[in-house]
Length: 331
Ligand code: GDP
Image (cartoon, rainbow, N blue to C red; front, side, top):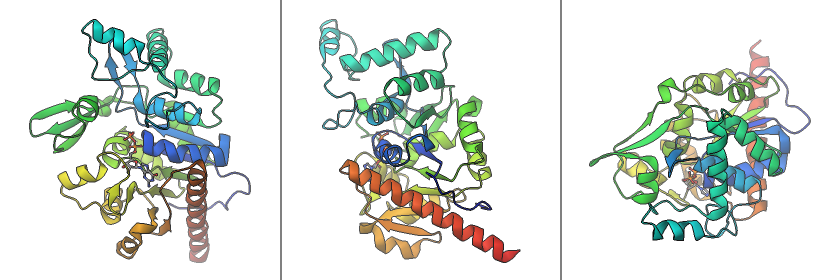
């Protein structure tokens, strides 16, 4: 980070990098706190073709969450969904390992139709966000396919086979983001990161390996984050050394790194200027050689989400002011 602009007095303009459920919690808080000043760059490494349909799980989680349509009890999919399609599919002997609710199905059918008609994923997502009344800009990381692939001792598994069908049980040896080398950052993502009014970049508390690394694997993404010259901060997805949900800590163990803030900071080394960690991990702060903000990071309620969003933005603005002062003193 090299900051020369003073902090703006209006809502900070933010870009958030986000995966699915964990990331969307903070994205919702950011959207409620700062509205249209927020752009959310979403992982599409989980996207896959299923039953002839283009499914974008993380984009849909973000759209349903920010659009007030997510099923909060189940933790995924659309609220109030029904399952007639799955029952009928089962009766026909079709593939039922990946659950598609009836309402959710409409999203995949319509997205597939529009993509085939030549509409980009970025454009489709923008239209749905508008229809759902979402103030923030939701941006797929790329319009080209990147396929997160989990390399296990028994061979390669596509992401959804690992995550949904095998329930994250296979040991992760390494991850590959197939197609990433040919993917292009969308113009909309590049513009959001190049926006001269940008104030900070916030990496949501998403799984670093499965949700954030695919975004960072898009060519030019890391360079664009650095070139933005604003603080980049990451919110730890760990609380007390455990994931709130999902395989983050399990994958860290399998990759031979401890599930703690230091390992996360090392994972993002060279990219981040600060880290927000949970109060229960306060002891980790001393071991970190970047600025740390210790705060309650468990987001149970909407108020928790908004509070953490404001904490992140305030922390980033502090880092920017400190950097501007340091630059001024060095002149
Ligand atoms: P997924 O793609 O649906 O698995 O979602 P993400 O990758 O975006 O988020 C998964 C991560 O979110 C997990 O590592 C969780 O520990 C983390 N997470 C979920 N809820 C919370 C929360 O309330 N606070 C924090 N700090 N992390 C959370």
